Length: 402
Image 1 (spheres, rainbow, N blue to C red):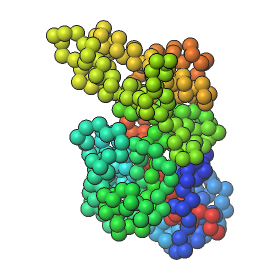
Image 2: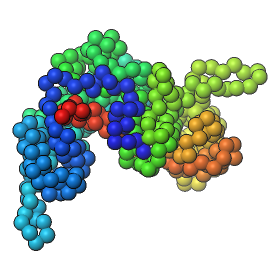
Image 3: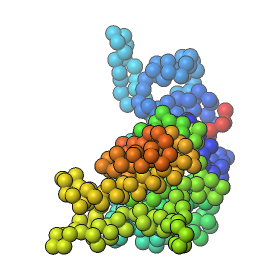
Image 4: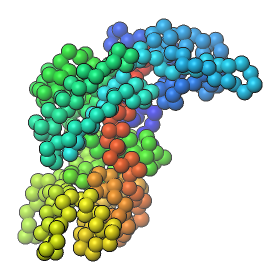
């Protein structure tokens, strides 16, 4: 599991984004602890907060006054405490603001706007004209459109915008810390946020899925695991000793670059493994080998549906692809020995491939726990949302200030 800080500090190159501005409020340690408790657990009464945090009544009062002064808490009602008097309920206030999280996926761009205690304020989605294996101009324009739409929909009661996070289908070598860098790399996005002076957090999409899996999914109690995405693209997020591994240049887990094919008379090609294992190539093979006179499935979802219904040819293709996925997983396991592999992505999350993948991995490497994600297609978006919220929180409360 990613630790309380490692999920958004230790595992990422975020130093430039977490430098506390000179006007960041100076909160006491107890006020910051109360803030975090409300951010993680939602609403609570003063006695509940004091008991959970081990704070005395005077210390609790000072902390709440500190937060109230900044608009960081607000009263939302009363709760009966047993047979005694009623206690006031608190939640994070509008002064805390909100964060925007965007998943720039291969087939869709999805976004969520949320408070820092995870109340959803706005959500949206944008379909792409075709599968995007890179961060293409079309994909960037869709992200820019999403940002523009959110800004038009923003309500006064959302409070200030604190941070924007974007999960990208590409390697992220470093974090962006200046408007000039954003303009040079992503001009359309830069135009959408030109007037904003807030952190822009970029992270690889599979790394984001690993963050979500650690926080909310099957890997919640695992210090070591890998998240392997198999869909339009292939990729891996690596968590070891509770920390996300990004590598020297942000390329850890870029399994699409593994040499493939590998034989005496064959020359490996760049990203040939992804070309072969991706859903587009799978469906091309299915189409070529499908029985004459019968309409072949148009996408992987249809293929798996037919296989589930007992269609022999569909089942054969699914089994063969599962065997190939198992070989990829075995290669990852043999290098990292993570103990737990979580499969995700459009194909990886399908439980039909699980038995075959397990058999192949156990036969080639050794016993390894392999599961499909419980978060489905939400994994990447939930990961970038969590990362963005936590970075916004660190800026809002001035982590480290007394």
